[in-house]
Length: 263
Image (cartoon, helix red, strand yellow):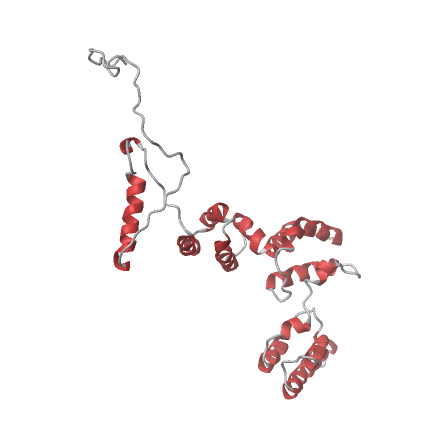
């Protein structure tokens, strides 16, 4: 201390150090570095800058760790990174950036590509809540409607945030699992899970409808219900309707023959 205060005394290492005062930046502050020039070298310059900031830092006392900066990835960087991330890494990215509206479509698209697993539950609750509902049904094996209702109540809030598509295989699986337990007066939420013939033929060509009817094996909706849906389909011509109704009639006769043992 006496040495730094100017007294004629050689420092012997026994004094308390007085740190030099210099400007510092508190943790969490962000800096914008603009890189200009031809596209051929901007990417390389960016990589070099990121490496220098992370490994060496800027300013004073960098050898002891001061001045190091971590690169803050932007939405464009993350859109490229998200599809390559494993399940665990994807969840961590989502936890940090779930509030970024620019990434919602990317997170949704990536969730759509993946199979449900407990590790991805956070993402599926946001973007595919029906998968969480189905997983719960498979895990708890409800035997009465009140058990189904209890499970549904736990997922009700999430399900309201996602559209219900009755022809989605997940929605159909939920419906088929719960239908035998449903009361006569089924509640509106369960009615929304029930596919109708109109759902199945919407947007299909006459050939696609005929192929669909020939391969139809579901118990719900009943095959006979397709007659009215075909007759009232606005996108089919009269000739298309006749051909579809003919296939429907043949399919129903085939099923009736099998049930009576004539086939």
